[in-house]
Structures are given as structure tokens and as C-alpha cells.
Length: 201
Length: 208
Image 1 (cartoon, one colour):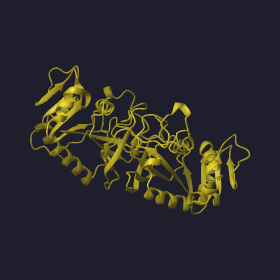
Image 2 (cartoon, helix red, strand yellow):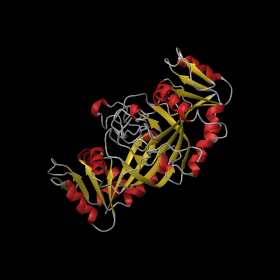
Image 3 (cartoon, rainbow over the protein chains, first blue to last red):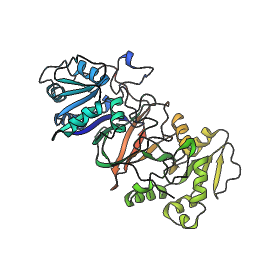
Image 4 (cartoon, one colour):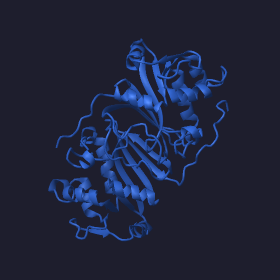
């Protein structure tokens, strides 16, 4: 399977609390819920179709918990995103979860890189990572990402955790798709392509 | 004049040292020179047109000196479209310390820079462009003086260096007014600030 990441970020690269968030997760972040007002029919349809084409989902612990309590409690037929999450196999990278509360979930612990390598070696399909900032940063550091989907929301948030850390690997990217939606969200699809080239003069 | 900012950034939002390895090593930055290999003729044409439509330029101290020493001083750069635009237009540099600017047709803005920038913006028509000048651009955002933001996003993650947007800064709602990409994968986004963002406070019912 091809491993793809899907991240909603602000123009300043923040990914924290794109939707309304519970206080205990916030750690001083006060600008939650910055993304949803910018979604329109076209961008919503894009996300629906993206989720529908997934072969399986891979989560970090926090996004898993949130999605399990949100999408996971919806019945079949609730909508394309809920149905995709509820009917496809799910994997969660966590050393602390032992009894996952969402059906069809496999916990990856211990040698997570090897476990993900195995999933990626399976033929066909797409292993999608939604949200899951800590996991996404770890996947990028370990060269495990095949494709990165950034949905850039037209807002500067000015605080909060960014997708890309202040200090991290340098990565060359190929832009494979770029489009703008009516309310100003832009989609950028990139494929990592090794180390960047730098001008030497 | 409309105040517009034009900034080259990586996908992770870094703006430091785009041109060359030794252009800007502040803070131990070692990944300079990231823009050149990704710059293509479409991006060049876009950028030439941006410079050519400027009526004046506003700089921070650092970028002013880099530009004065290159576009302002090197004969073969002065005759390129960007060099010609820069040399022909009035230039302003926001600096409390600069007293004798080296580049002709430069006015130093010191003291009440906000008032000076407001005065320039109050002039009828035209475009006052800010290229590079990270500290100045962040200050302009803080003071709500920016009318349009152009970002050229290069397909690279740098993993170090100064970002355009600070870790802690104002929150700004934006309208996307233009979006395009170039053959080598630079995406160009043009945004207009429209005040404070709207935050959703309730989780929506996904079935509606």
C-alpha cells in the first residue's frame, strides 16, 4: 500500500485543533475551530472521495481516540467519511493502547517502522494518515511517506503546533497536483523525492 | 498605494537564505540556496511582472543591503527586468540606524515608521511592494498594514531556518485571490487579509 498523509494546515502551517477542541487537549491554544468555516461543497466532496479510496487508515493515538469517539459512534449510512472510517481496517501506532475501542483496529506497538513497512509492502491500495501530527512527523523523519496531501486553509492562526517542526529533516518534493477550492482552501499534493538540491554559489 | 508583500517560502514556511549557501547563515542556518534549483521560467516571468508593476519598494534593513549590493550594484543585474524595476522606482527602508543609504533614490524611514507607512499607503493608486524583509513583514502584519500577501511556495521542506510567520503572532482571516503553479512545482498563492478569523465553537453534526 502507498502511505499518504492528509493534513489540514493554516497558511502559517499550524495543524492543531482545526475543529473545536476540548479544553484538556489545548495547552493554552485558544484559536481552535479555524478550518471548518472554509469548507465548501467541492472541498467536502474531495475529502469524501479521498476517504472512500483508502484501503486502510493509520492513526496516531490522539487522532485515533478523537475519531473513535466521533466517527466511530455513527451508524452505517451516516455519510461517506463515517462509512469509510467505520468499514475499513484501522491501525493505530501506540505503546499504551491495549484494547482499542473501535472495531477492526490493530494496535502497532514495538517496532512500528517494521510494522508499517509490512503494511506498505502489501499490494495496491492506500494507507491513509489523517491528522496525527506526531505520527506524521515521525513518518517523514523515517522516509515512510509516499504522498503528502496538504489542504491549506486561508487563515493565519498565529499560535499552536505546526505540521513541520522547527528542526527536522530536509526533503525534496515533487508537486503532483495543485488546486484551489471556491472558498479559498488550496490542495497541494507532494511526493517526497529524497534530499533537496542547494545552490552552491 | 496598496502595500503588498512578496515572499518566497518552503513548504514548511521557511524564508531564510533562499539564494545561496552564504546569503544568510544567521542562527547557524546551513540549508541556504534552496530556491535556485526549483526556479523556472514561469516563476521568473511572474516575478518580473510583479516587480515591473511596483510604484515603490519598502525594505527592512537586511534585505535592503542585500538588494543594494546586488540589484543595485552589479551591472549585469541592474539591466535585468527586476534590476531595472528596482533601480527606477523610489525605495524606502525602515531602519532606525541607517543614515546614509548607498542606493540612489532611497528614503530612510525612522522614528514613527507606522505613520510614515500610513502616509505612503494614503497616496493615491499604485503598489508599494515589500520583498523579503522578514522582520518588517511580521511587524507589518502585527500592525495590520498589509493589503495583499503573495507567497511563492517552493516544493521543499527545509527543516531549519527562520519562518515567515512567527510561532506567536496575530490571527488573520484571508481571502484567496489567485492561485497557480509552475512547471517545477512552485505554487503561487495571493491572499488579502480580511480582519479576524471566525472560529467554530460547536462540533457540527456530520449528517447535516
